[in-house]
Length: 184
Ligand code: SF4
Ligand code: SF4
Image (cartoon, rainbow, N blue to C red; front, side, top):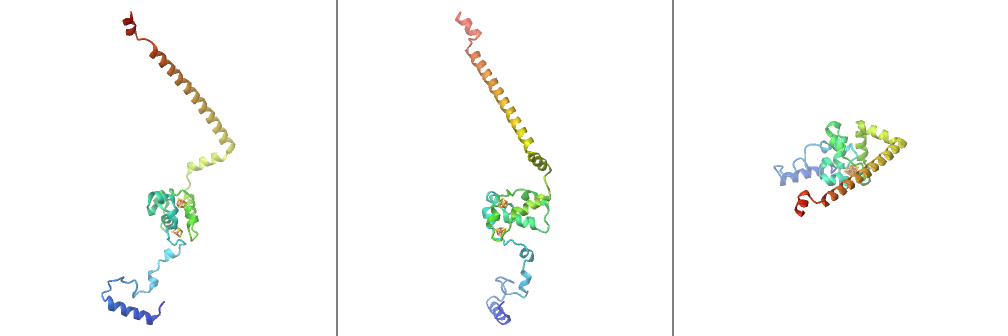
C-alpha cells in the first residue's frame, strides 16, 4: 500500500524504537505478507459483524449472550461444520420477529437462514397440527362444539357448588343435639 521505499522506512523506525519487537508483534511491521492475515471465510460471508442486529434481537435482550443472538446465530447456521443436532437449542430459539432483518445494513436475513435450517428437520407433530388446522371448516366445528361443552360443564359445576353451599348454610343453621338437650 505504501510502496517498498516507505515501508522500509517504517521498518527502520520500528527497529529503532522497539528493537525487541514488543509492541504489536507481526501487526504493523511484519515479514509475512498482509494477505496471510485475511480471514477469507469471514470475507466470503455477507455479515460485517457490526452487531446492529443484536441490538434489536429480543432473545439477545433476555440472554445477553452471543450464542443467543442474531449475529451469533448467523455464525452458527453458516458455519461449515454446522450440525442441527449440536445447534438445535439455538436454532429453535429465534422468534422470527424479523427485527434483525430491518436493522441489518448488509441486508442479511438471519431469521430466514434459521427458518431454512429448521425446514431441514421438520417437526412431525407440528406438521400434523398445522394440516389439521388448515381444514378450516372441521377445525371451526370442533372449536364450537368444545366451547359449548365447556360452557355446559361450567354451568353444571356452578349449580353443584351453589347446591353444596346452600346445604352447608342449612346445616350450620340447625341446633346441635347437645344444644337441644341443654335448652330442655
Ligand atoms: S428474527 Fe430471530 S434473530 Fe432476528 S431479531 Fe427476531 S428473534 Fe432475533
Ligand atoms: S446487522 Fe447484519 S451485518 Fe451486522 S452483525 Fe447483524 S447480520 Fe451481520
